[in-house]
Image 1 (cartoon, rainbow, N blue to C red):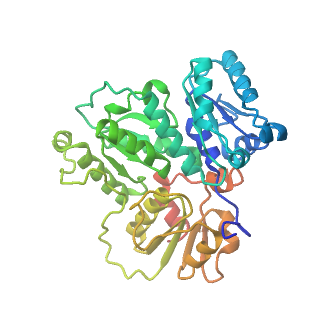
Image 2 (tube, rainbow, N blue to C red):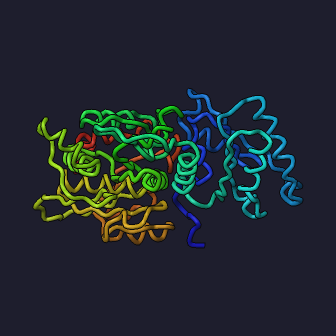
Image 3 (tube, rainbow, N blue to C red):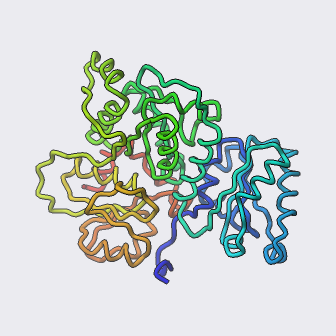
Length: 403
């Protein structure tokens, strides 16, 4: 029962993560469920729904079909719809009901592809994990199937942005700000996974010299591209000038000494040794007393980047309270994974300041100052207009809240 949320809300589910990751890629996405999941996703967790065409549907699973296992109806319905809509691919994602009945998503996808000739995926999401699990799974599967293997890396600085979904960054211009930051640093952006890039860009992801993972949803595809092409990846989000400067240096080092040396002629950073895959945690040279302790609650990669940037900007001591799935060795030793409400409350006991989605405020201790930072993945559309673009405006955020 520890997973039961008594007071706060919950993160967007893994089923919705699949839909968000694949939303712009021209596929037909089916949530296998009775009803309700599609409306929850499209009205609360998908800000692109009203101005971007996409094919996201519900299967309309009935009680009798669930009990008797009538998969033929599902397959026939999907095949008929595909003949009419001509999607680039088909994806079927799970929800709690097919999880309980033991639905075989891989076999169903195989049968659908045999009937239609259209590449098909089956994702055994359960609705019980967070969006990070589903989105990471979906992007990795798409890359394995569609990214071209017969491409050569560019001779100049080039990068893919991995894990770029509105569940972490909304549609407030953060995606454009990250791309602009990379271009100003001298990188060609090959593809963005998966906001703002079509199939023609994604299939050429192997050309990039390095990958930038901006959220944990991009970790799965980062590992796939590393296996396919040996492409190193750096984890972080360019929040603030100080943190962004060190992230730029890590990206250029990871891209290789030959391309970094070319950039050196323009006065940029020099190359150095670097492990194949670099994390977002950097040394910071602030000589501070760390009187204030700031707890940042949210997804692991974005929260870690914000915490590191806050230490550099303010000199405060930070701790990440990660409430989603997160890869190994991403968080620092002082950070914590919090799988339930009680874990979050326990981790807040030594905090002075708490930065989190407004829906966390009810569990904020009386002695802790609460600073709201809405996220699409937690509060949906409720505070959408208040979500800041921290890539562009971190310094303004710090000043506004007197940090």
